[in-house]
Image (tube, rainbow, N blue to C red):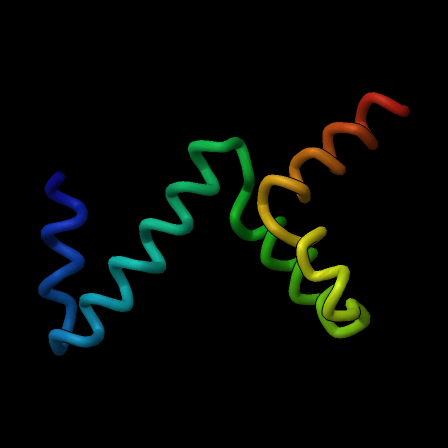
Length: 74
């Protein structure tokens, strides 16, 4: 995959590795139908008020399930 190879040479070696991880996570969200900006905005605003036992509700899978269930309810 050419994109992954290009990210490995982004600045220093550690920067390339971190960028590859972030790029992989974002593309994984997109493959699952999650708009990365929308997800991050929602999660980062809600995480402040979230208790430790509620953090699992912010995982991408549960986030999408909740979003889909809200769409069906309307």
